[in-house]
Image 1: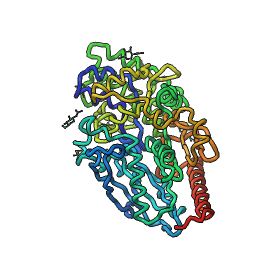
Image 2: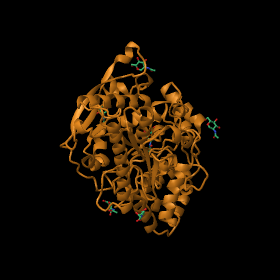
Image 3: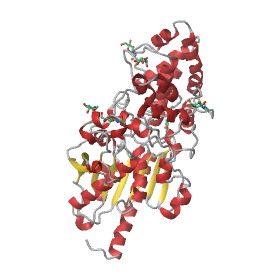
Length: 502
Ligand SMILES: *[C@@H]1O[C@H](CO)[C@@H](O)[C@H](O)[C@H]1NC(C)=O
Ligand SMILES: *[C@@H]1O[C@H](CO)[C@@H](O)[C@H](O)[C@H]1NC(C)=O
Ligand SMILES: *[C@@H]1O[C@H](CO)[C@@H](O)[C@H](O)[C@H]1NC(C)=O
Ligand SMILES: *[C@@H]1O[C@H](CO)[C@@H](O)[C@H](O)[C@H]1NC(C)=O
Ligand SMILES: *[C@@H]1O[C@H](CO)[C@@H](O)[C@H](O)[C@H]1NC(C)=O
Ligand SMILES: *[C@@H]1O[C@H](CO)[C@@H](O)[C@H](O)[C@H]1NC(C)=O
């Protein structure tokens, strides 16, 4: 939920101002299964999810899987949840569907993920959900306050440790249910989708296959264009309404023009009904930029956010120049609702989750995303790796390692490498999700397949079913189910052919 984006605001108060300046060009939007700030305000569609069949457990997890120093023997309680009501049992090697948590509390995932509960009964599967270390209740060092303190404690928060956690818990569960040969399918979305794909590649003896939903695992270094994310944001808005796109294009200069007047910030503050005084026009511009990005990333029926925003912007006809601002403001109100005042920092307020993710994106998950010149409706602010690194270093005392993901997971030449090495991965992407730019969009082999939907948004395929879901989404989900079902049945056949006894 984590916006890297949030870094700029978060850090201004606590460190030197040079920090905020150096990170300012970074416009990296949040990852995450669903919008953290908007889901309850705008979409009145927050469903009630029956959680009565879920059992909560805590696993005594090693803090550090990779060294054998005395300190690494420290442990923490990692939360996982099991739903065993549909499981056909060890006797028939019934499968296990395991959701690998991402940068959020498991509580929010349990209310957002549909794929396991929808398909569990048909596969007679054991359903497992595991929380990511340093999120929710899975805190090392006794409390969030201690765990999130500084680089010395945060250093154990990284993807390799998280994958090892999942391996340990999944083996523990197999032992607990005495089921040596139940195949495990791992499922994740967004950053969790990367983890699912990486888990299949690093732990093939534990996971039979992976469903990686909206996983931008190629959005590292120079593998993908840095402008790609906002190129899609622009494209989706333009396709929704050319007029809306034109208004947004023109609005930035107008904001700057007004801001430059004597009392300009005060005028802007009144126009946008901000809760506090503005420090610069960028407060408003970043706020609006995030609104457009969120609206596109989580755009889905029945209340298509982009349509609402653009409808509001278009509905307000210009009579004189200032109306440009009224119109973009109306767009913001359409998304976040009618409020007495608007907190321009609402997307970047620090939470335990965002503090933990800030560390991850300032250490290894360094995604170079910026506003670049290619067909954009935004003012230019290209990603600057030098200043990004300086910013992280001045905050944590240690610099990021932007090359490590490529070294460790090797996503360069993914087609060439995975074709001969990997198998059983589904990469699913909605092409209207800006993060699809970093996704695997082409089939790699018979068993590493890309499922793309033109209209799909971020993680839509694994989210809860909704009334009136479009036909293509229903078909996409069914296709994913069929592929997973076929992996499991081939595996069951191998078990029989190899005469492996239970
Ligand atoms: C964040 O962590 C602090 C300190 O451990 C805790 O008191 C607080 O409840 C946590 N906040 C959330 C939203 O979980
Ligand atoms: C982190 O905080 C702990 C406890 O306050 C302290 O002992 C340690 O030196 C700090 N580490 C860094 C890198 O600042
Ligand atoms: C302006 O700066 C102050 C001090 O750094 C900060 O507390 C406030 O939140 C900022 N205002 C906005 C709208 O970001
Ligand atoms: C928003 O709230 C104000 C004050 O309560 C009200 O006058 C206005 O009509 C509301 N606008 C919408 C679009 O609901
Ligand atoms: C990137 O940031 C560095 C350090 O702040 C600065 O010296 C450099 O000019 C910037 N590069 C570009 C292309 O803006
Ligand atoms: C695609 O999304 C748009 C909203 O952006 C919606 O109006 C349209 O009906 C959708 N098309 C399909 C086939 O779902």
